[in-house]
Length: 435
Image (cartoon, rainbow, N blue to C red):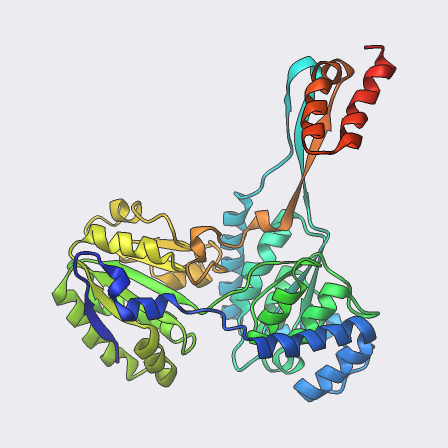
């Protein structure tokens, strides 16, 4: 079910299972991209007409321009069906997420240089953001919170929600979280056509500045193709967790945490890296035992067979180095000195320190964002945050005295690049100043 692999002398490149795990990708093949591109072009050319045609074809729902948008009363009605204890938990989670993200806020700044020159940066929120809420058999209110709250904290004035028609009616918890967040602009559209509508606008659906939120391969392909005309959060790959643990870790804890990611999908990855042979074997046995009682057993077994592994290294330092090299979405560190060992890992979407910081606390409740870089992209990217919904504008206030002093240098640099008009733009002002 899951391989136990002993790595020798940290020679990781020779291990085929590790290479296989690292080779995972979003899987946007040429056929999918071509199909999605035709959908996008149709939305650009025919707007609402194409949007309604695709909704009827792919979702089996007949809508009109008047019924694409959800009535606010329906949101309230559906939200009222959700258990009160779930609402209470949701409100506490929203509070935690908001508090954490408020610390990411940044404001305008200015410095003064020579001759009264003032340089600065102006920070403003995006005006309008589109949030994609995926369909399928499950509802993900936590993802709505993780995408919407940073935007709200940033000061985004308008958040437009799109979601497949069946999803919204079948899962009132989505309406509940939208009500709690005050998001009442909701359109019953999904798939690549919804992404295209947000990117380019139709008579009914507004054009947005940025699109966030997960989806299937068609949604991911659409986000990839519209990027540049509109901003996006990322092209998310399969979920993954790497647990770094030593002989002090409880095998049942480690196994449960690996399974928490393996149940996402067949291409998710649950990985343990340890220096303990005893722990490795105990975790393997726990995984087999715990999997037997889980509803998503078939998905888990396929995930662990293809992309799961228990790697045994020579030391915890080697284990940390391997985790760092993998740059995964989630890293848990459960060792005798979790604080010190976690500090050795620089490339990860999120790091969970200690035996009582399981990854699901980050998914739902702690307040940190669970929209994280996957597939090794934590080497250069970060969790979704308030900063993703802010734009920064440079402000330049030059003075005549400083331009007189520096114009010759500007002239030389501009002419060195072959831009005489640039040079003239600076030099012409010397004539007017009498210099």
